[in-house]
Image (cartoon, rainbow, N blue to C red):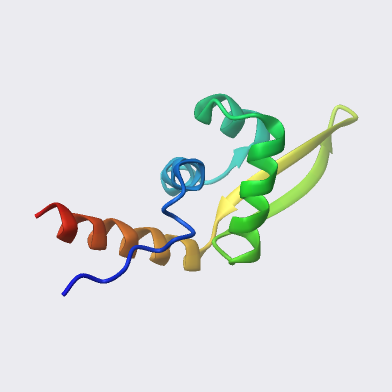
Length: 93
């Protein structure tokens, strides 16, 4: 019996963000925007959804008087991502 895939991670952009963050200690908004080729507005909405689910944490600060948004994957996010990958492998096999 297949376990359902986490609908929050099944979104292409949210999955891309989580895939990037799983291998990094943290990433800033601009890096994620460039790597995912998303618009700022869409990325912002998707990051908010991931944060509300507890999958990432977002810290807002300033660097050289410019706003800086930094994202980190949480333990809950790591567990959810790993479970998603394992469930996906079962569908592929």
